[in-house]
Figure 1 (cartoon, rainbow, N blue to C red):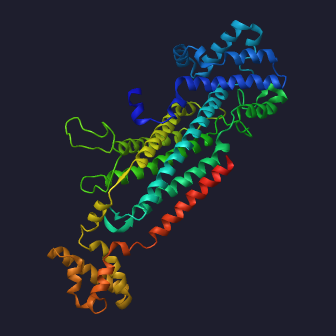
Figure 2: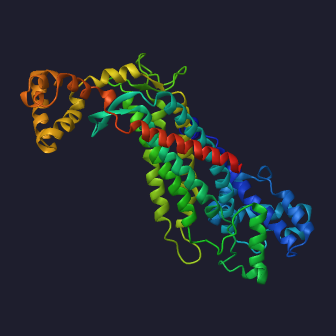
Figure 3: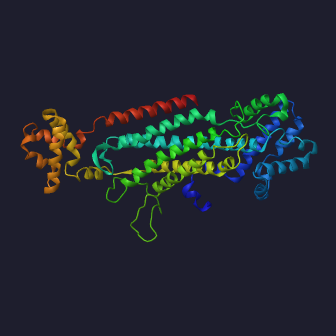
Length: 454
């Protein structure tokens, strides 16, 4: 489905999981394995040199590998055969040491980790881009007052700054989690046939340390052939991020509806049009993000199911990861990249927000009146009384202010001027600005700290 890649998997992460990148990841393992073994005197240095020179994906016949994998059960087996043949063409003696002491899963898993490392780096960059875009929009529009909605109904006034702050706050946590998990999940896989490295005698442990250093990966304390929690942690992080992006896209798509029209996606030639309706301006970016958020839960669920693997190497569970995890990462990365474009160019319409605040003719401010009246007659009694007045306003098609000005209970405790103040949305925002500023400060501190460590 490459025709849909620019739409659904538009980020720079997608090439990390191309066929050539998959092969190169395994070949990077084979080259580093040979060089690490040469450094320890396990194989001749000349053999390692010949092996390294052959470890370039463009030298291999991907179509033949794919067909051979259908018989072998994985890609590493035919890849090692092709690599051995290619090395033998240059030096028959060196060919004896290809894949020395390793097993197919070592090459496949470590190759995947190498791919994930690059994908995570690129994801981190796009995450920073989205965070910066949110900070910019929040700084510009933090005091824009709009309708807060609960259960899809008008609730109380809030601010666009606080609405975006919720997403920014979540993204800052995702960035922190990503930084924390990197050294834990980017771990070398090297265990040999059954996880003991018995074929290497007493040098197995030394080789793990040397190879991990050469590949700049964490040296795992034990092989993790059938312990897949590291990959699940990666999958869980991406899946959670995708869900948070989906929530952002859902809210924005609802705010772009014709009847609401408080924001709009960025304008671009040919963007969001209809094949038959010239007036349409569809929220394409939101659709892409929501499509990813819809698909990712099933993918991560499959990966959780695949954790139950047999003994020292899984049958089927391991195989189930090969396409599911890359697809999950690519979909989420595509959603993240699209979200960056969306927020960076988001159009905001404060006048429409103000218009929508007046749609209920003051009912949206009923809680403010209730709290003020409650100081005199008690909160519960005030709530019941104002609720009746709200129903009366709806039934008689009056504004809440008109009903309250004609209410002796209310007027006995609240003046007309006080009612006008209570019914002003700008005066009933509570700690919205304080919450927004707190998140902006956290973003600034986190960004400053990251720059200091670069």
